[in-house]
Length: 330
Image 1: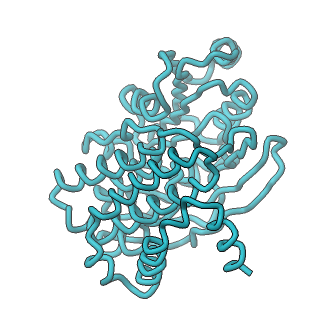
Image 2: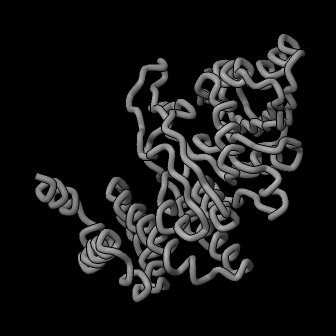
């Protein structure tokens, strides 16, 4: 039975931390280690972690306490100390589904895969189900011939996946040191080193939405999404796969830039709104549209829709945009 490392970054997660840890230790898979990295929490997280370890000393729980940095650095510290064959990334307010580790490991071994992807369930603060995400069709296998064409725009959340930790370490792969787009950053880089991916028709974990943390990003931290894509592009270039990036990944880059521009309508400060939109428009102009035009009809539609938005970008600066958007949706 190969060891599975479960890496859990935590920052001020005292409300749901015990639920998260309980979902891991009750798995019917004994050979596992739990690495919890507390990222400089200011609540009672450290006391909770230390107490939990004492009360569950029969389990292999490895705590790491560090100054506040970000979730990427916390996960990377976990990768460095992890000793498993496989790895699961789990946030401290999320919950692993019952006995899912064993199921994923069996699927990984049966199909000789480098990655197993499943679905996930969205819950609220009271553990009530909001949505059962079923984007992934189980029982599928993907090889280097169709990994990018089929899976590059799959939801990049890390916790619905079982990764090959040995492959990660061999490739020297880490999460990009960014505060926005961390999951996408890692997923896109991992895709490049995969030779085979399999899917399962099961929910792997419960993703918790905490509504008081869902406020719109109203700071220049959103510029990190550009840095995240630059980091991915650098990784592809080093691995002599820049053409793959241009053919597939930059359509995601374009989509994210426009998404950030759309969000700025919520800003009250016009100058700040204009600065952010202008910044993303400059980044957008650096992309190679000619390559994106060669996509199938679905991506052509995305391209042309974004192109129209670009032509009408002045609407991002006014309240008129919200009005027009509501009318178009009707």
